Length: 168
Image (tube, rainbow, N blue to C red; front, side):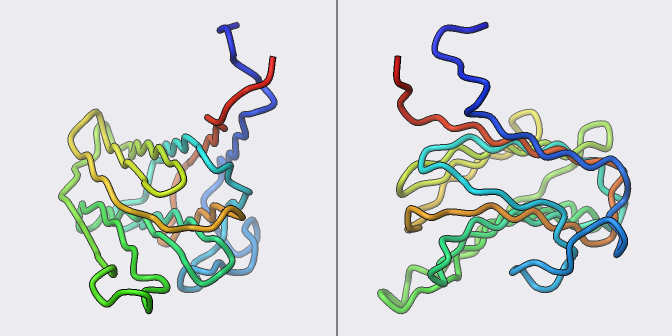
């Protein structure tokens, strides 16, 4: 085991069957897609998603704070495009709303995303280094992660790791 590694600080969510009405929760906060997984997020975290999407599948990771502020990271397999959308509550400044996107071809049919976040920023790494996006995220401390899948997937796995300080 690595020094400083604490297995209780890691949460893994796995589903191996396609997302259907019978094996998912009713709907998510991100547009009514089936909600496949939801968990609390630590203030400083690493989130990894590995998925085998259907050719027309769409994945959405929504990070929300329960106060109408959210950040959406999504992938559309048909368009082969990664999107980062921070159009949540933006009334504090009219130019804060932003949508960034980049083309992303899957490697061996797999979608690999790695998000690293702290109190005010989110770094998004996709594929094997093909895409890197950075965005400002003004989220409160009560963060939740919602994974939704539309159009199906053979398998997906989300791992959340608390990167905050550890106690000895």
